[in-house]
Length: 505
Image (tube, rainbow, N blue to C red; front, side):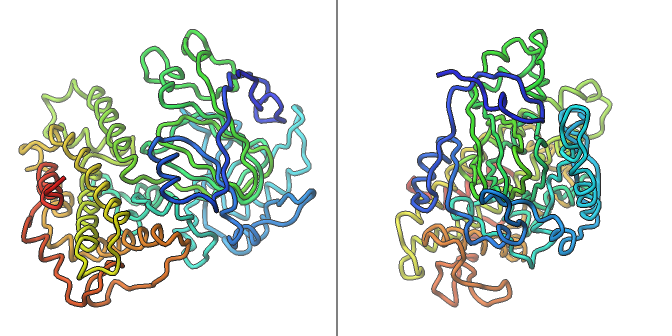
């Protein structure tokens, strides 16, 4: 049934537009859902869901809020100012557009609190609180305050390759790309958002076409989703520019098919977590003063979304500078630099990333398939690693034909990229890789046990194997891998390594 969106009922934030809403996001008790059910029903088919009952033990739900009327929690902003006085954080001005997003400012936490308090009783000529235009976004809280445990990632979301990787590796190896500002911006993809009633986020699909999960510590949000199969309806005729705000008067001339779009709606309450699948465009409104915790992440189930985005964005980057190809010393390197600047990752960054996850998954698969070596030998564990490797193989196979991986271009890549992708022995002994491998092993043990808190603490400098499933003090799995392959020079070698690890599949 087609009905008016709940936006029609909103105060502030641009109420009044009627979009075609054809359904609501499913809501489930997260405590009664198993990981495999979550994968089969939502992650693999790429469908959104709201999960309840998963935040009751989070310290942030108490520390960051205070009781308000009708059992509603409210943001405890003085607590942030007293305990988390970040030098500067990013704040979006929801009243000012800058390209495809809101204009960004930098403020201290104390300045944000002072502004909020000063304007909380100030009403504009339109009848809305002036403070509602400022929205603290993309605060890398976990990176800045690692000793304060505000929450624990639910088991449904621990298979998070993006943040596992960034906890132990830089995103970029090329010195022309890996400047300080870039590294801060991609330090991780775990964020805290704080916004007053009426603040909002323009229409977008998430970075890298990743999954995301978003938990309301307090407050309520209205989400409007558009399925990937309809994403072309929000673009202009050239598929270059998309609608910024579905609640404004969208130009029928510029976006001729916008009115055909069919939206799915969700009102997310406090203590609820929403799973946002890959490639779903969405626009979000804070219906109350809200604090949320948000992660972007990807794994084997949506890895192809990441590669497809990189591939399409590379084509665009290439088209923009095609006319200088003949006078450019290293045309592909320039394309890759532009891709990293525009998308946040380039082909070489992505290849180094998947190489490490191939190696970590091969190690774990070896352990679960060797009963005498393993503490755990289950079909479920085997399935995880086999599926991961098969999905990476599918993506790596598509990468083989990319111009960036031609012999000519691989011969002239930066030394940082070359050393990061070639020597297998060096990679396996690297502390960053060992940390990633250990975290991946623990994540699947967490999933297997259905626990939120990992059962065992281990250290990088411990002797022997770092796999949770390994029972041998003299494990030689690293030697076995290097026996088969000492160098990985490109996607073809990666495919060959996976085929060696999966000889019967």
